[in-house]
Amino acid sequence: MKPQQECFDAYVFGERIILVPKGHPYTPEFDLVAKEYGGKKVRVWRRKVEDEYKHYLKTGIDGGYEAAGIVDTELGNKLVPLFEDTELIEQPDSICLDRHMIVGGKKFAVRSVFPKTATKTPTDKFLSLIDKELEI
Image (cartoon, rainbow, N blue to C red):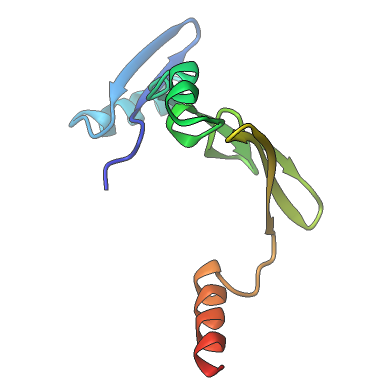
């Protein structure tokens, strides 16, 4: 499956930025140069796939994934790609992602909560639910 939005590797050296397409054959060499000269490697995501206003007129949905750009958000010294309209809230025992949408004229606030110390993966939980339905 092709990602909805592509990104570039960006090597930042002071005031200079070098953009390198993902999968470029010289990426390992750029990584070495960045490490040797104190450069920083980050990702730069291409802009939104579709204009928000046009998408809303066409579908009646505001806040859909089709019109949201992607940005990297730092979480525990690691970059996490999130939609630009998603707010990441780190709590002591969990990580929350908040999004706001309008669908068919109704406003929705969606909060996804991910425990930091999960005992099961989402797939395990889903399979457990399927098994319970089959028992009925």
